[in-house]
Amino acid sequence: MFIQPNKQAGIPLYSQITEQLKEMILQKELPSGAKLPSERTMATLIDVHRNTIKRAYNELKADGYLETHERKGYFVSDLEEERVEKGRCYNLRWSDIIKSTYINRRIEEQFSSF
Image (tube, rainbow, N blue to C red; front, side, top):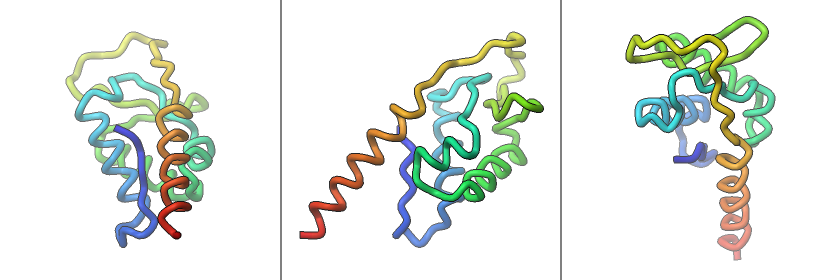
């Protein structure tokens, strides 16, 4: 699954991002302990404002899907009550997950305008 917010959907972007990340967590595509990109990095990767990402991350945190570690960032919470080893972190290639989809979508938008 990829994060693909649709600016023409009529649904707030933060809500789309929240739901897509939540689904990735529930489907174990984002395992417990996985580190998410910073707000700025994620915003750049999917071409939205940083405040949009901040709101999505805060929603996920409020719902228990994410936790923050001061000066370290956002991490996927352990939803099954199994504690993650201290310091364990998954090195996900967010640029691969997001950029290729974003680029492909932009190309499709370019050609669909003809």
